[in-house]
Amino acid sequence: MINPRAINHIGIAVRSLAAQREYYESVLGARYEGEEVVADQHVRVAFYSIGPADRPVRLELLEPTSRQSPIAAFLEKRGEGLHHVAYTVSGIDDTLRDLKARGVRLIDERPRPGAHGSRIGFLHPAASMGILTELCEPLPAHAG
Ligand code: CO
Image (cartoon, rainbow, N blue to C red; front, side):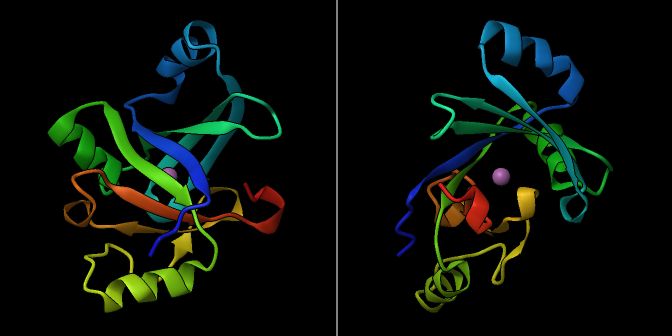
């Protein structure tokens, strides 16, 4: 069982991080928390947070950095919008192993590096009711 401790973040595919900032900061009123390139996934990510600072909910905006990016393929097919929901888990290695043993379709059988030093793994959308699902084990300092 995934047994999530929280929603870690909501992933949103965008063509341009810069073009979105006005909306997320000035219309939605989210706090901009900076950007990071996740080379492994060919994406540049901008984080925004809402809610109390000690227990924020994060939005992860994903802009492709190359044609090889899964986000580039997603934008081509579906356009901008909701891309994935990420749940905070502890023990991501065991969780992925357990899911595989139960025959749950996975994109990642082993964790790979995510933003902020986290370790992440994706379930196949066909295994998660059409919503691409990310498991995310934060660095201890970023837990929550
Ligand atoms: Co994510």
